[in-house]
Image (cartoon, rainbow, N blue to C red; front, side):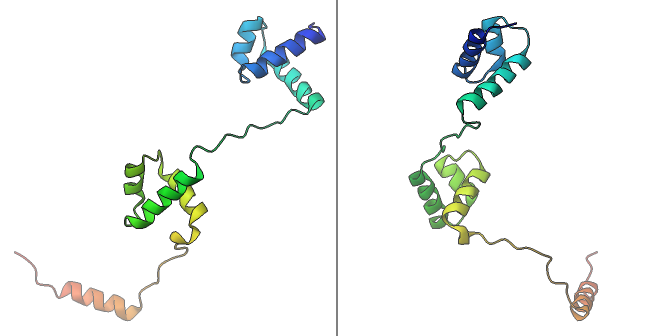
Length: 134
């Protein structure tokens, strides 16, 4: 069994190493990860450690506004904006667009209109009346 001090030292090293289980176990010489994880959960409850990690935004608000401005001024082309400004992905730029300029992209939901029988008949007649090439 491990003493309370050993468990606290293990949890503090685990946090210091960025919650990397393998590295912590190698440094301490412990054999399994389950004990370390349960000790950490106990530590979280006791000291009210925040459960999640919030990553800082990758792009600043000014950079997002610049990207949206470029998109709107240069033909509303996402691919061209990604190439010009070096955005890593289409989804990231789309999220910025949706956040800053939600009315820029409208999505069509539903099916297209079914052509009337008269329009279908006219299309068939036009197709059949074309001269064939020999």
